[in-house]
Image 1 (cartoon, rainbow, N blue to C red):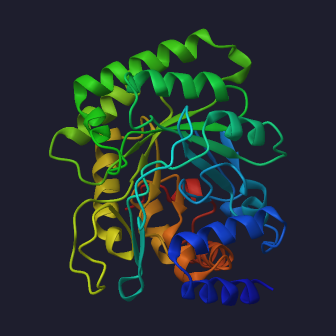
Image 2: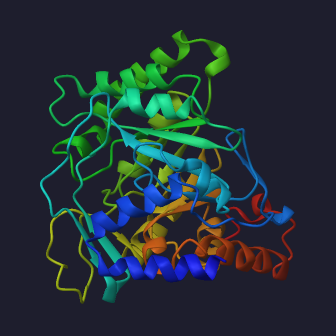
Length: 347
């Protein structure tokens, strides 16, 4: 059945990328998605206190409005991250803003946090069943107090999400990445930690920071120390890149964040840098260019406790997650690892 869904995914390539995505989410919400089988026990793991049936997650950006997290868990993902959601609904950047670079197995997007806002997002999350579902929160483009927007998101979704991701690394909201600098990050995480500590203890869940792969020397270490100092649970490495490695597609010159296969070397290098800087003191989740069991395994050995993917689904279809899990389990066993956790940072 997953082969049929993969065929349907490839057929969607005849449509405009954004329309194809909308159609996919709508179909999933109607229950037309694939069903993944049971998980191999070797893939079960724990990340920052989150018990995951497997270590393969769906990255933010696919399910912006928390419409399809149930079907994607059903398709075999061990966890699903919804969003990015901003306090107020916003239309995002002018279209076209999503480009499929088929020759490069890549995507460029400049969506600009288009979403229906916190209220619609919260209403859907409130109805969720079992499974690990995270909320990726951001700031409105025209917010007078961007840090205040993150605080608003945390408060509104408190008790509804399995974990939170603080997204300061999208290149498509002007000035957002400046929050990754030491002083701005200290203020942001300080205010979020203060808010978290004042909210009901029963709603307390892990909080992650999602960073860009385009960081300078010294920034990695500063981010790690700030995350640890403010009691966050970990770091997601990494978001899309504004760099442009050699690309063949006619869309290569489009502005926006690049994801998919060309991001892989940069994201892998960034994971190694964060692993070295963290020294096991905070959890790391790997994202960027993961499209196979070999990719997932390499990122885990580089220091990731779990991984996320999204762009590869555009080219491989939803059956990809099952194939990645099967291959990853085989690789772990072949190298004598009894669990994902045992392979983390193995080099």
